[in-house]
Amino acid sequence: MREVSWADAQEALQSIRTQVFIEEQGIDPSDEWDPADQDAIHMLAQHGNTAVGCARILDLKKIGRMAVIREIRHRNVGSKLLRFAVTRIQEAGNMPTLGAQIGAIGFYASHGFLPEGPIFDDAGIPHRTMTLTGDHKKTLMPLDSKSLRFDTPDLLVAIEPKTSQKKMRIAIPRLSDEDASWLTPRLCCYASSHGANTLILQIPEGEVQFPLELPDNF
Image 1 (cartoon, one colour):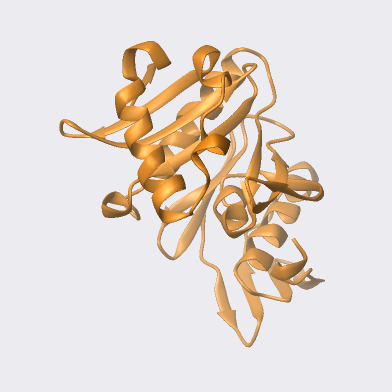
Image 2 (tube, rainbow, N blue to C red):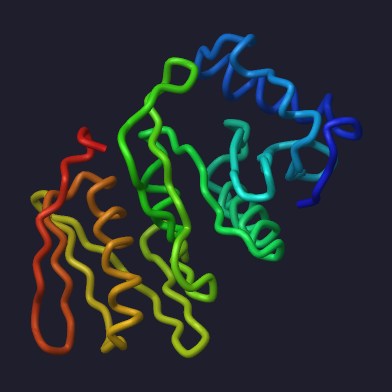
């Protein structure tokens, strides 16, 4: 994983984005390539000598053009790219934001991003703005294929969601009010984007249920 410029890595970046956005998703090349690439900060992931993933940062705050080639997906490359970009933005003192394809909202929610505002069209694909708000020292990210990791300066806990009949049940330990207020909306977003219409949090005091938006409403 490394930071590159468009001038230094244009061929590799174009190859990845052509495979993912133009060939797989059918985006028109005129929508994919724009002048912003020249001044953007680019992130490049490699597997051996092969370029396998990329992302770019605009204005030191907006993450975009995140792509991982089909053959290397589900190997945590996307998560590493996103965390790399988030760290770069936070080091500059800014709040990370992005425009997520509707189908990827769950992925970004599992890393702590929250959706805001209406759905909008970008290159013919529905998107929604998402922002990583709150304490940047708190993170929520995939731990493995079946669980999440909630991490704060004082707490590290594995969370194992269980979904049955449109209800997602998650057991969490006793949290401070501050940690609970940060974590709960992100778990709601995560559960909704995974097809649940109700999130049930099992806490030391009992259970709390949250009715959720249907994923189609994102």
